[in-house]
Amino acid sequence: MKKKIFKGIILFWCFFIGIGAVGGALAMFVDPMGVNTGMSGFFTGLNKLPFANIFFKNLIFPGIALFLINGVTNLTAAVLIIKEKRAGYLTGWIFGITLMLWITIQFTIFDPNIMDTMYFIFGLLQFITGYAAYVFYMESKYRFNAAEYQNIGKEHKILVVYFSRLGATRKAAYECADKLKADISEITVKERIKGFTGFMNCGRYGLMKAEMPSEINADLNKYSEIIVFSPTWVFQFSASVKYFLKTYGKKCNITEFHLLHFILSDLSGAFKQLNNYVDVSSSSFYTCVARFGKLRKIKKIK
Image (cartoon, rainbow, N blue to C red; front, side):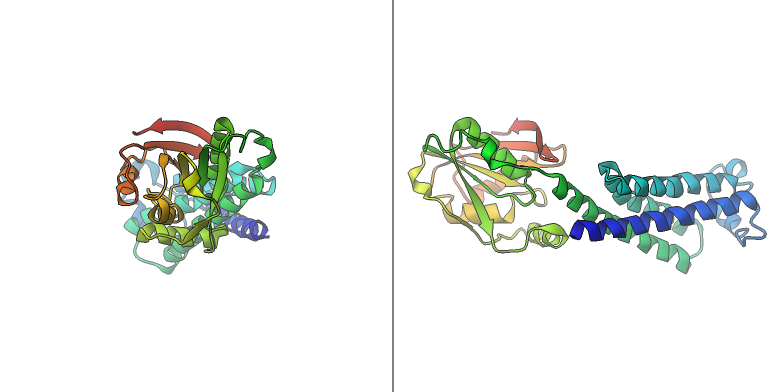
């Protein structure tokens, strides 16, 4: 339901901005000097730009730029969204940034006006709702079947502990447990973590560097090795995993930490945080680039 709602919202912004940009560009093409359309005043600002005597003798070049950058792009994204293509959701989100950058340039060359301010807000709304639509789209496409991991729990010496908001960390934890024939247990929370509201709530915890109360249904003391998987929240371990480590970290034998993240960085700075919760002298630390349910790169930091 939420995916459907935000799909409709991002489609509205893509069509609204795309059609508006195409209409504005056509007006520039029909009346290059802006006499009849009231755009002649644009030349005062355009003449402040580099190479104005080459590109801005009339409105043809600005029209082409508007047509391609804000028009064709948004309308193409709308068509791809209707066809349920990931590229449509991704570009529909990114083109919100494009519009804000476009308006930022206009802020520097034109006098302050309500129209530019409104379109900057439109770009911000497109970015926010586009991101939400993209998240819900990816959630709808994610598939996971625990029954596929048939080796889990065959040997009760190792425990894999994980927390997962969207599913990527859960999948990585299950793959590890299946390979080691280990038991597996999920860290659970009562806080809202799903959807856009959950994303904002988790981001709040991450920014505050706070710990989110969590629970786990496992006897941690009976395992000789415990492996912890966590997603990344604001360049650090998730708040729920930090709470787990604060509660149990010095009471059980944690041997490995796996921190999953989207960006191309090893996030080695997050390793230093572990000293606040556990004795890491005999533990290993891995960072893993995880994108759309797939582990793409694993790096051992220690």
